[in-house]
Length: 253
Figure 1 (cartoon, rainbow, N blue to C red):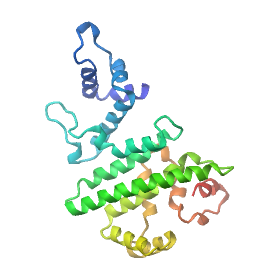
Figure 2 (cartoon, rainbow, N blue to C red):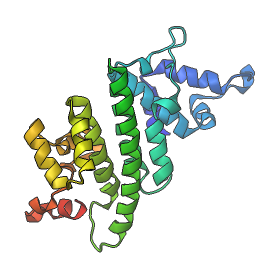
Figure 3 (cartoon, one colour):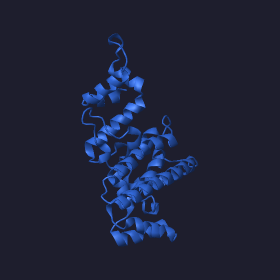
Figure 4 (cartoon, rainbow, N blue to C red):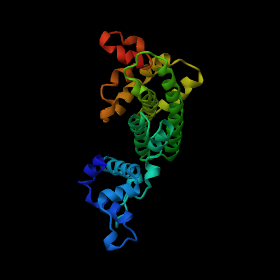
C-alpha cells in the first residue's frame, strides 16, 4: 500500500480516476479516501494499472493509446499484462517467487508491446506466436528447474532459478525482433536437433553474437535482476565460470 500511494503522488489524474471508480453511487457522506479506494478496487489490480501507466510513459504503441476525454488507456490492463498475470498464476501471487515471477512476466509483455509496432503484419503474427510459445516453454522448464534446485544442498541464487530460465527464453524473442532471419535460423537449428552450444556457435558465426547477450540486456532495467549477468551469459556453458567468486553463478547456471 505504501508503495502504491507513493507511486500515485505524481499521478493525480490516475488517483482521481481510482477514487471515482470506488465511489461510484456513493453519497457525499460515504466517499472513500484514496487508500480505502485502493483496498476496494484491490491492491493487485491497482498495482497492475500503475505498471501499465509506467509502460505508457516509455513505449510508443497503439496498445498504449489513451481515451482523449478521460486519459484512460484504451487497452484493458489484463490484455497489456497478459504474461505478467499468467506468470503470477503459474508461480503464485503470494508465494516466495512472486516478485521474481512478476518481473519475468513483465519482460514478455514488454516484448509484445515492442512487437506490436512491427509494420509487417505477417511477421508480427509470427513473432507473437513465438512469444507465446517461448513463454509457455519457459514456465514448464522453470517449474522443473525449481524441483531440481530443491535437490541441491547449496544454491545461493535459488530465487533466480525462474529468472535464468525465463530470461533465456525471452532473449530468443528479443534477438528475433532485432535481427532479420534469426527466427528462421533458430527454427532450423532446433529442427535439426543441434545442441545449444553448437547452436550458439552457428549463431555467433552468422549474426556476430548470441541470444545470451540479449538476456542481460532485458535484465538490465530491473533492480531485482541486478548482478545476475554472469549466470545469464553462461547458462548454456557454465563450465566457463571457473573463478571462485563465480561459484554461485555456476551453481544456478
